[in-house]
Image 1 (tube, rainbow, N blue to C red):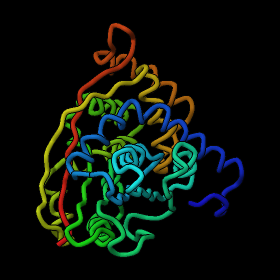
Image 2: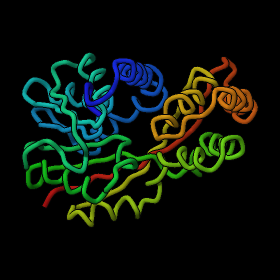
Image 3: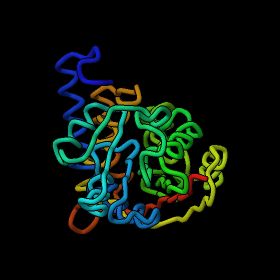
Image 4: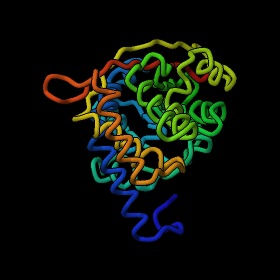
Length: 273
């Protein structure tokens, strides 16, 4: 929802704070290891025009801007005004626009490349989003998305889901499964072939998650992700889950007291006919 679109000033401040927390915690913990791989896969070159779809606070767009140089152009689009406010502060030279992946606010054939990093799982209509990414690139233009592998490929999050199932119920656990909804490669491929993409290719890549602590990892989900998808938890239950998480996720704690664990992602590339 756009700032001023019916939200109180306090709500707007809360959303900005959440977006700042996302940039400060989750970008270094999970997301900033992937832009280089995604842009390599889609062959972003100096002078390219690149659109970052569901850009969040702009980690992919910032790397794309570095790659395309002054002869290129980068734009980002996201449904969250708060995310865009943080993105704009971090990279004011990039064109940031409010919009949905299923109806991108850009003209046909405006870009050489459209890319989306860890957004595709949450789009209401994935085939329509794929059509839109293909529409906004030139004929022969390139499209790429990164999505998380299956939950089974990431035991740390599987353990967190099991903890939520026990402590908070199925709805909370299912919300934590959502980011892994495209772990099945054929489901991901079908979204793009159904949209008319050609030269569809999927590769899988290992990564490492790094959080300051178990509490930081789990609290981000309890106080950030779950309320965002309409599942706020009582404070007393949050405290119980955080205490139990120290045991349930203890095997991922390093000698320094931080948290590190393996995870993997799929990168799909394709072209517009």
